[in-house]
Image (cartoon, rainbow, N blue to C red; front, side, top):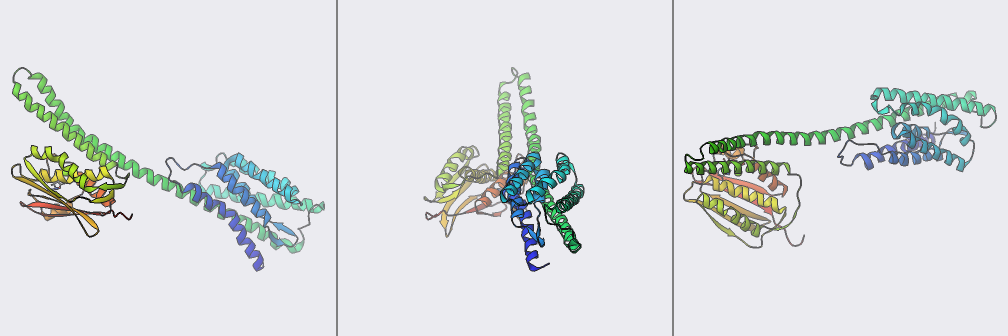
Length: 431
Ligand code: ADP
Ligand code: MG
């Protein structure tokens, strides 16, 4: 063993392992919508050059005879890429041997058909075997390959077609060659299985995460929506029964029906907003006009609650963000402010201005305020003090602000009111 042969060994390991890592980078690292499938074309496209590189730069362990590991890409392409990929790699190897000439074409033609029998037999069920089983078969294939090659070489050597390698001096190198083949097989098989397992696990994790969120949401929506709908149903039933008796009672029922239906809609909107959190479409947004729009939108709700809204919104406030989402934020905050103030003499004050690198939006109300404990729980899913609240408005709001690299701060004292300050980074024109 010289430094030269160690270099060759390392180079050979690279030839064997590079397809595995390229396959991982190019194919298995993509985000999967379905379980990671095998890409047979890519397996061929990677195994063929790997085999050819092995043949081109062989190991010179025995002086006048070279060894190489091109059998590994062949076996791997059959087992992992299926019969066609395997056949194409074998054909490529034959073609390359034919092109380069020498006795290797003859040797390959004798040995390959023998040692691919078992891989071809196994490839159908290969993915159903466990790792230990696969490893056992791989090592068996390695031994068969060595036995077949050495017998063929003995035969051709005796016939004078290839140099005779079975001289007493070569025993150690022959054993080393066998050992090297086995360890290279072991290593590549190990790398492949490890990478496959990782890809599967990643896919499972992502899928489970999505599934659990969706099923949780679906379950809660179903649960929460059922109650108001039951109420609606009950009152409609009553209306039918008492239609002639008392006309003005019907009006009350109607209002109840409507408010319960509105509530059902609110809940569904909040849940859907929560479910849609991952998709943001950002653009330049004029916060000034957005806030004026929200103010107008909420006016009727404020009037209904006899709350007055005052605004002082500077013009030219521009942020980079998702327009509908930001609107959702200020609707939620304004709605909370309006709901917090007493029905009479309710006052909500909206201010928006730029300060340093940020745009600040302050919404102040003279409502019931919050204790320190309540302040701490803001944004927690399902935290609500309202009889008909969902406790999701601020969860959604906090998450949207977070996605805009902004912050939200509450100042509140019980009985006096609350000020909420949202800070969003300014979109400068340079960007
Ligand atoms: P919901 O409005 O459905 O209850 P939110 O997440 O919007 O859910 O708000 C959670 C809770 O925070 C409210 O129930 C309320 O008690 C409290 N809260 C939010 N904003 C204010 C405010 N401006 N003044 C007083 N309490 C507030
Ligand atoms: Mg709310």
